[in-house]
Length: 263
Length: 214
Image 1 (cartoon, rainbow over the protein chains, first blue to last red):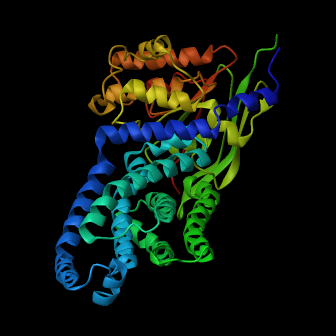
Image 2: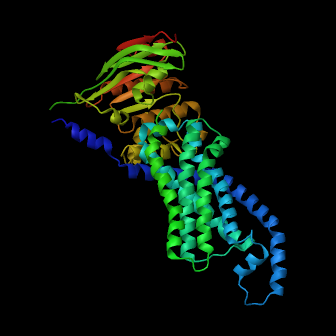
């Protein structure tokens, strides 16, 4: 007895998009561990950026050290920052950190789609996977790379600049929300750039308008993080706004990606 | 017990790139057990027609229809029914042959064990070379691996663009075995090939010759 159409459809839908996405993620991680393309691109940029920041902020640290010796011990670091270098306070440091993270992540994340397009493997992927599964797999890979970059860079950056932690929970929320927004933005921009047979320059050009909004929201969240006794409502609004940006970008990308993916 | 039958119908396909018409009102019907051949000069649109059949390109006008078990297949499921070999197709150079097959097999819902991998590598003449990086393969070995990729899950429809490109005599014999196996596939199978080689034209039961651009 022949199978019914329903049975054929059911067979054709196996595997689910989740298992397709996890297969793509596993493949990308395996390929990355082997070639280290994204890691080396991000690593070189991060090392150079941190070195630059260390040199550039050296004079600021000297001024602060001298000043600290003159002040009584009871003066808090926040008050000291406000007194000495109002423009080089922790929110500003957080902003600069995210500028570094954005460019470091973009240096590596463009690889995911552009490489598939340039090497021609995109044809095999299009024949074998649904657009939703491809987007999910690439997004999760980019999120892992972004989180790894943030975890590697942030402690070194904090040591160099003296950026404070603030409330650990809020700090982690800001960092995770930022990584989510950055990975979401980078994924869809990389897909657009790859489809346009683009280069890194195009990647940056398309991503800039989104990054401006993203960085404004980040600075708001950083201000809330470093405001002493900030009301819960403000924390929720500013950190939640940043998180919402990531969710919104991912939701819009998931809706538009099939049109980008298909010719 | 009714065995399934399969067919591919390309009906009135037209396509253009910019202002240049590549395909004008092309039709071809290939049924189970048959091999259709698309002939034509370079740039005449053979590869474009196969891409349209594979669902990789949307035609400006015309329709691609698959039937399986004598019932129409939803367009969104067409790709699940085909094995595709083409010069445009590339597999991952940073992975081994086996890793490529495991990855694409997983995407097709297959869990390939060692016996399954040995069998498919043996069919395409890559037995013993599967653990090498594809980046280190010769162009002929890569072409053979494309056949292994295309045959994963034994799809009822094979679309072969320049099927013997880069292959040696033994490789050409492998392609002939694949096409013969496709004709006699349990449940029905067919192949469409795009070629300029007169020898490969002889493999077909019917052919369509493209006139080229206008």
